[in-house]
Image 1 (cartoon, rainbow, N blue to C red):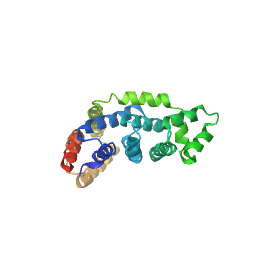
Image 2: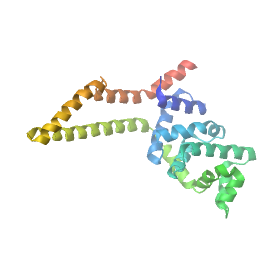
Image 3: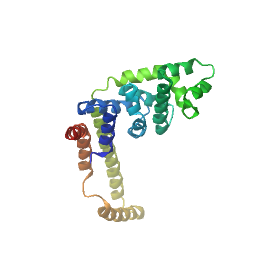
Image 4: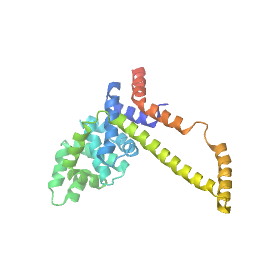
Length: 239
């Protein structure tokens, strides 16, 4: 079981007819998307599968596709709507035999953008079309940023680990101070709290997983670092 992240990246590789050697590049682009826009893994894993195959067939580069999803995320467009909306824009432009970017430019130049977008792409896709029509510069900026994504996945994994470890250390320090303050007092409140803690400790002993948190953190880091290698191994074995 490669897990949701590996399956998602593998699906994007398949959509773009890319071999396993591109797994690291795709992973870096996805990781960097979080830095250049309001996207997240959850957002991209919902939006991209709805549009990536059609985007590939319409020669929309993976970096540009992620840049477009980033623009829609910044505008608070739901992930499913973003993926479906852009897919329909591509399909309608192909049906009309016109470049999709030219059709978006027609919307931007219109005195009634909503009406024009509805005429070209239908009312269910009009909002996405209007946003993209007015975001050509932002799409360009996102795309350029994502073209320089080398190492982003590894950096994101390290930052995540540092954040988790830092939070655990902060909590640990605060908890120690709390315990020390309680142990200094022999009053009713102090004794009562100690009894509650003792009881809670016994309960936690029954429900806490046997693996320690540090082991889980190490395992998570290992899994993230091995993600690309797993995808490569799986794709190779299926060839």
